[in-house]
Length: 214
Length: 200
Image (cartoon, rainbow over all chains, first blue to last red; front, side, top):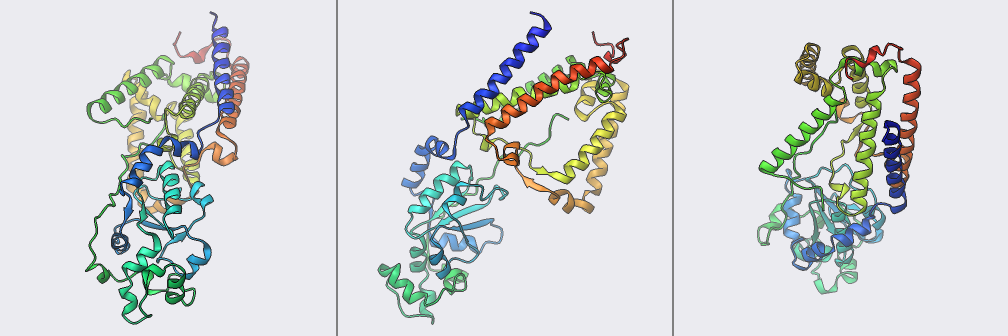
């Protein structure tokens, strides 16, 4: 084969490869979720990623921890009450580009009302290859139940956890206090009588490579 | 699914093989000769453009096909984050060094491995430059780390086009540049072929 023929053949091969790529497309986020389905379902079923409110509070008080608390509830619920420094995100943001630029060791804790949204978000964030994603076990209601002693120390009358969310919200949150409510970040002392199984293990990525061909 | 997380002896062996292959290929392509490398800038010998762009194109097509077939998860592949202004400044400095010295850092290693004196001196300069950078960077660290920081930023992110479309456009641009490079070589190469630098 002449050099010119070789060049033309290789050029044709590369062009065909590129055109094929355009036609075939790349895996979407949903494709990656399906590929990882077994592993993700196993994590959720075995309870490996659902953390106790006590553990989340401990993380919030740990200055060494890179923590992002993500609230998945609707805007009204978020405005009524949310954890200190939590960010409210929509489904589009979870499945989009939110989180790009976060430090790889950031621990993301998903908070919602009843767990369903958190499981959906967990699958998408793991498919986007965030390594340290956890869910607040039992959602915001469990958080309130866990730390209601803070309320008994002078703020509002006794609550009945079973009444959550609507009745509890009316009793606990007479106004939209957001993160100003004492429950948004109880003092570290609230952990003294709370025991839990620590599940958060920060996955540190392998050393990243850099550079080019020089 | 890749990328494969290599450990221990396998990690060392694979990287040794890759390094050997890369150095061998560069040397065989004539990139151990500063005259051939510098001739790129005078448009007399466009081998550097043709070899490097061919490699980029081949890697692009293969990596994205591996991703499309589910063999590699591109989310796990390291892509250098973009720092626009420090990248531009570094590119200007690299370009100046390249045209003055006739080497870039990688090719200077290739040439130094064959004991070319100019490459050894160039390499010493590179090491000195790295040392000076390391000693002075605290003064401009925030600019270096934050100026035009765009994170992991690809052509597909910049254009908003699907990856496959970007691949077609890059391939088209590359093939056009290969054709154009040969036209420029014919126009600017001296008839005595002085730029070939002794490589048959």
